[in-house]
Length: 346
Length: 198
Image (tube, rainbow over all chains, first blue to last red; front, side):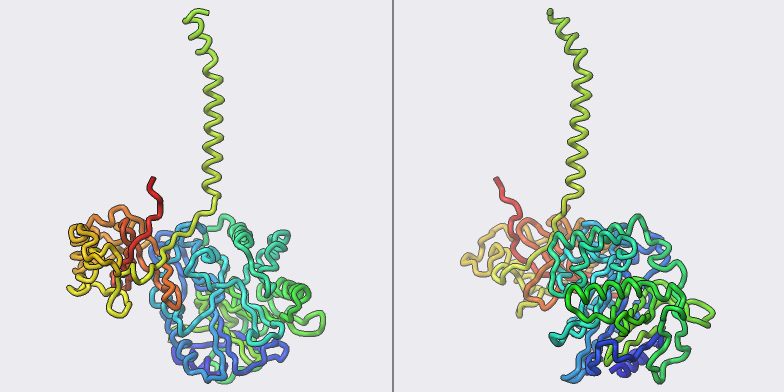
């Protein structure tokens, strides 16, 4: 199924392999089950982009629209015994940049969507049935009726009662782990415990953490990365055959920035495994705008993997490239194999 | 104490009283402002009403804009029935023709369906200025974007523009055509009074 996705992407875009990892310890063995991850997009209205003097706008929104339509086709062509599910990993709409901080104006999200009609319609298409995570730039959407189905985390595999091995999060929790360690205890359970649903008050607590993390930042010059994210050894040509292991970041052989959140994610997942009887080995995130697969050995001799799916905003640079390229990444997980692709206009 | 003395003594006491009162008012004002700023604000949304109280096209679909003579007639009949499709009287609102003639006429002309560039404005007529040039029905009315329609599979992808004229909710769908936002469909339903009149 990975190859079918790759063919679909190649039919609409230039594709380069950012990273790949095939390993039985990923804990997602079903090769008839393909999960596709679209990271942060950070849409704002054109008027706001102009007036706010934001350096970065979302990259290649037309290409992303085409990709979404292609994924809808791919889903429609899936056999009855196959699963294809698409996730948007949060920060789809950037309420913070649109309204200078989250507020109670109920049309903030509506006016962003007005300006990106084709992309919004493609990504929200019932036939695509994309599952959305709330990010830190659109967390406030949880209060609005249109976004009731958007979640704070998903677990995989989700087709049996087996303890989940993969957690999908936006990833901003790892900011809190590192910056606000005392506050994290109050909300940890609502992000990691599969059977606990937050009350309105708990969600308010999470919102307070989100607000605290934003501080007084305006995000005019950048959101996450003042410099292009370093992707490492991205494949130069279009991928004919994808190796079982490519450009995987590990301690000792990779720069520190390519390992960001690996330890925090590992510790959170290890704690959740003990506290909530789970088997989390993989965390799939967005948030950092830095596409990479990073791994570390666990204390029990297993493998913990962080799949950071990148973004569709800001820039990145590959080893050996003369100049940066706009972030435009798609990641996928199927049959104990994870891949991240960098897309560009054909 | 004669009257003058009395006046003087009151006069000398006043500055302290005034000062206390001013501080008191200031504290109350600060408290009221901070409480109102911190208080959670309600999410405002519009819920689509039962079929009896809504005006739609032939098969339950929204009415296409610009209005055709048939859809204009359908809407006017709905208004004459006072927004109740099961009304026995066909002129439950004898004033409907006068009240709604202009807006239905305006909605029949595609030139009036063009929306402004700035969709972020909260007043409906700031967004639908062309339409509002031909009717005062929506003057100064708020533009609400969140609509819950339980008949739909999912929430709207592009949020409609919704306005209340006291008697009815007007739910307008819109769509970008050649970089212009146009009103494309309308659903009208009887409004529920939000406040009890005393």
